[in-house]
Image (cartoon, rainbow, N blue to C red; front, side, top):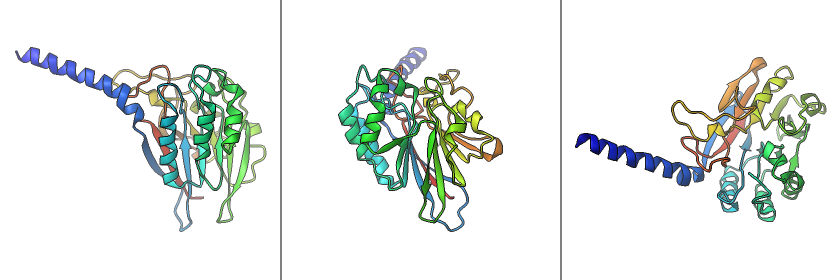
Length: 269
């Protein structure tokens, strides 16, 4: 009797976890707040990072609207998107609705984005730059922008082209830098190693999804997200890398113990 009861409870638990992974956790948006740098009385720059939204039929624009609402409540100075807007644009790509939602994101010091591998694939390459431009995002493709801060200092926001389907170049990306502090956007986190001798203070990446499903003895890792996978890494020359676990899903529409993430950084420059 006890054995039968245990099997029954275990079966219900497994079914419950599956239902949670497919229908509940993918819609849970968690905001993580971090502080970077030393507080010496100056006002921090609030930077919000979004990554891997993967708009698709099972993750529609309505979910993107929830993301926009949560981000705007943070009142960021800068918004950074590290790639993969659509999962497969050719299959599901409501461009006008996505543009309208992204347009409602507000950040007085600018909104910036880079290419992800899904932004090149699935026919998204034709529309991704136009959507971002219409939503007031600046698409950085081996380029950057010196952003002046209210305290008289500046941050160089740099963005690499996608390392899998594009042609990333750290040298070109940093060529116009005139700021003492650099934030480098790279969709694939393992590309961070190429920038470790370039006086870059913070690298923000995505792509890994944190594996999407986190269970013992089982980890899904993407190409170019095998060495650096999730969260913070302190690399050579005091470079900090943060790997965002993303907002959407790909391959399977499930998340387990890796809820969708909005990362908020208070950066003291």
